[in-house]
Image 1: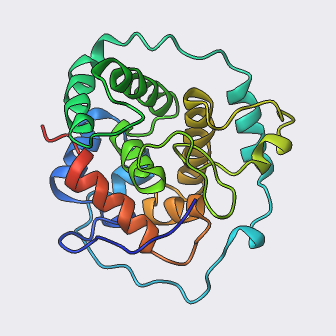
Image 2: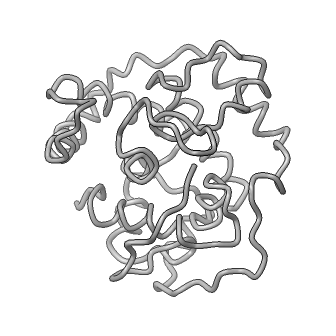
Amino acid sequence: MRSSPSAWADHHLTGRALAGPLAVLLLATGSLPAAAAQAAASPPTQLAAPAAVIGPADMPPDPALIQALAQAMATEPDSGDHFDAQVWLLDMQSRLARRHLTAYPDRQSRLRLLQRVYVEARRVALPPALVLALIDVESRFHPAARSSVGARGLMQVMPFWKAEIGRPQDDLEDVATNLRYGCTILAHYLSRENGDWTRALARYNGSLGRTTYPEQVMAAWYHYWWVKR
């Protein structure tokens, strides 16, 4: 998971600073954990970055996260047949089509991807549009993307997680597998950080103590993938 220059300029909707129509959307859809829902009522503020920056080397694998991943990967995938997602799928398909992605050149391939994103995000109570924003920042929707440090796939999952849960056979370039890992990891960090999106996203990126990456994901969410109701 990588960090890159922030496109955040107009809205400081990071961490505990979710407010306004975005907060209303998340509260209405039930996609925001209780701690984050409470934080959503606060006015937007600019967060000051902590002095210390904690990277992957400073964060040994969390036993609770290892257990959550093992359980998630041992669970059969959802069929993905969700009637309540049809409007969302069609809306997101149109947005994705405007990106002219080589990996998803036709409507059916885009719908299959979005259906899987929706299922995996909802399985762990994440907003599906937030997962799309993270994928947008991490891999630009290239399922075979690899970072300079070895992170792989749509959500740029590090391969060491496979060894941690005893599943070396898992293919992180497989869309369903990558999304199951990535969503489980992000949801765990969000719970650990009591709904603080800034800290949860920074943990996911391995840059706890910086706000650049969380701000970039939140900007993509708000400006492109957020569903206005």
